[in-house]
Image (cartoon, rainbow, N blue to C red; front, side):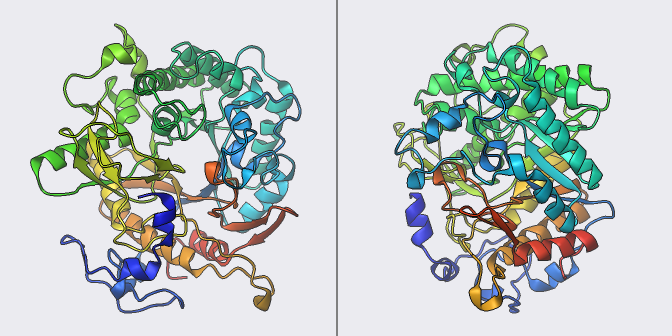
Length: 521
């Protein structure tokens, strides 16, 4: 099913489904605090309001928000910045919905003091941002562009002055185009280039930025760019995907060591994409397929860092030769994380496709995968689909709060109860200023999404998971990749014509949560 088919299904149609999971931990509530939404009793997978009211977070919990360089900065060719693969992609007609670009986006390169002041007003204590590699090294190699370093230095200083933790993703998809011209991530040389870049960041910024993650969603970098062809560089080669994945895992380990060597204060974690995978049926084949999905999509890079090996994500022998695996690579992969970070948006339903031919399948954005009718790829031989039993956001994603509990508790159990940070989590709704309410933005559906999901996160913490932070996606409405400006995830509304910022009702609600560590605010 494609994105448009998802979106055209209304919340009412989804909620009218009679399906309720057998293991739903409590009966739905009959209360409804949010006009315009169906009562929770009619929403499959919903969390009772009584449980939401009782949810609590520990003292010192870090409430934050996240952004990404290409999605918010703009200034795409200022102060010595080089071209990125996303610059080239968006400047190619027909690639992005609405034929828009991130050339200006939220103009945060110039407006970051205003945005940080807004973040402080929302009681945020952590801001996850990314650094644009071509802003630091225009061609991906060589001496740093000091104007780029100075920008992020000022950003970090402004955050610290506001008593907000600067949380840095070193790479959020904007590869220097010059490195793609050298072969991109399937080229093993990029692992060393990336380590050099990471060392530059730590040398110049590591006295103030102490929380680092090498990559945002490394599986998406490899699969969406080199297998599915949905994102730049738009290749459709499964061998290239496997090579890219191995290079990224090597780069993760090399960057870890480079940053630690340059900064004694550094802590290294991750920003992995994860979605809890549920088997379509109770058959052994579907259960095994769901485990392969978990191994490839959720913990492939985590396992590499923590144990110096890849998890069993493949049918048959792992394709190490195709990946370019060399003797001694396990020592490069091994770089145990100080904490584990991952995103949560929704879940997947997974079935075995080992007896069907490979068709690939289509993707939209970073979260929606269509049912191709065949295996997604010849190596994992799975079919993963987006369920629609729960209510759907306007971005086409199902609300299934139980998913974050299952994901957090599994990672906690499987990796010896690490410190966990939720690095991204949020929902897309198109609510805008209401002229009848003095341009207030009453985005009640977003508030209810967060109430549902955060109550399940609080339950995971109560059950022993060591979760220390949650980052809402996103602080601002922004450039949403191939969807352009047609999706809005922000706690703060952006008028992209004027760059006016307006805090949404969800932002005001989130600020009260951040101040009180409770959801009944």
